[in-house]
View 1 (cartoon, rainbow, N blue to C red):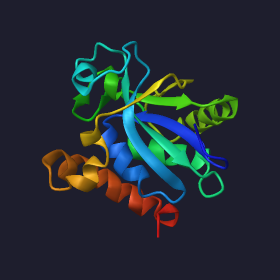
View 2 (view 1 turned 90 degrees about the vertical axis):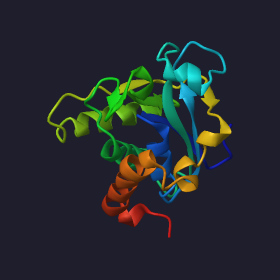
View 3 (view 1 turned 135 degrees about the vertical axis):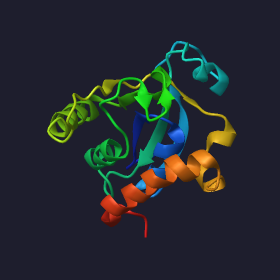
View 4 (view 1 turned 90 degrees about the horizontal axis):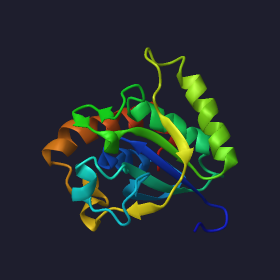
Length: 179
């Protein structure tokens, strides 16, 4: 449920720690929640997701103010911070739970997602494999996954994988960052 004047976006770009950390920096993104969607298990756990057998993707659910940041702009950030050309993989994270996916909320988001994917096809050297599908039930991840990068910036994965993605987004989208 969104508040008047806000919208929801649900995006899977590999490990949710990376996408969460980046979108927390973007002006107009009011809330970022790490979680799971797109699978067959009700209330899945992280351990179940990691098996790759539930069909869920690690995703972030963004609550945003479209007067401050558009859905299209969010997708532009999304396509800058992950590789949409690798099927079920982001770096060393391998499995369907790490797939590139846009889970749209309504026909307008679906239309914009297809437009942005078409535009991004000219940017990438390989075909884009990003799944575009209606947003199914979202399950929030365990508490220890929320704000993970902010709480553990020195942890190995955060230092070597998350931090460079945050730095790249901050450089490319400097004008879109929270002041």
